[in-house]
Image (cartoon, rainbow, N blue to C red; front, side):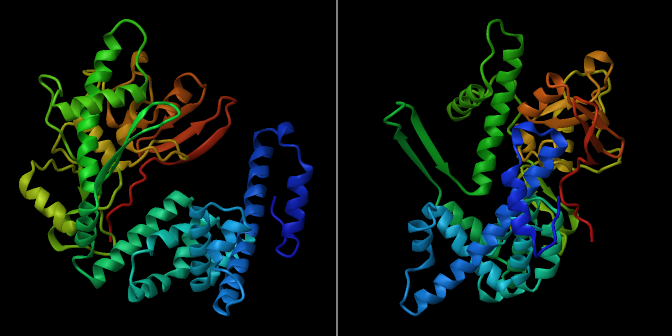
Length: 413
């Protein structure tokens, strides 16, 4: 449902206005959603122009600042007004994105990803980022907002590292110094709430402990009688176990996985560096080197013989080594539209274990709770090739998506 640029807004609006979504089948609904997104992008492009005009009038003393106008007249929250204000600045620096937004080729989220990635860059670093506008636009037009946002963060990290070898370390130290815990009671529900703001390394260490305790509780819940606790309840109980030191007898040590390519570890950052936690959060190379001095290192060599990862029929559940190997290849749930991190996923047997499936890497894929339920009870199908090409099939037998499940950026030159 694409329209010529000169008639797009009117044609798309009429199409959206005159179509009843309650009567559409799946393919028609997909086209309808695309039209709504195209119309929204055009409106966002117009708002960029309005924000730019208001900024010019404010400079002349004839209007309020854009954020105030967006809040007072555009019915934006203060947060959304700030995002729209930053969106205009990105479009002014990278006009190709404004044109693409008006055409519906990108979404406002793509532009917002650039604003977020460049927020802490200085002028010289931001100029270098803007120089990549053409390649960034190509990426935005062909990738989801989440994938594009990650590429923007990677580019910003690389640029900062070239300008300041300690930039990522300084940022981690700044976040570490600003870490805090806030507690309050919701006066309506009476629920006690705790908000933890922590640097990425502290957060990942905390969650490694929680996940270890949660896995122990999940194993106990599978053999217990009576109703099973919800995933959220298990997570809260696991947090209590972790902070109270009750991790269970015989439990393995807390394991924090960091993925880094050998060239980065030995020689520092390069154009295709990989240095992040298993949940996809970037870490400073110097910090990882320090951690490597203090930790047991388990190398994962793909297609090598260093570690036995295929357990065949010997074990029902994926081994810790297999979970580690899967997390090195995949950062998120195997569903193409899902961003739940791999550590919050179940390890799913593509060929059910009870019908002869093997607990081997080429038969395992991480699935979040909702998508795990979608496969087992929802009638959806997931097939997996030896090259880890996944195919999702709808309950009506139609192929929904085919592509590689390995969503980590390869560290190759």
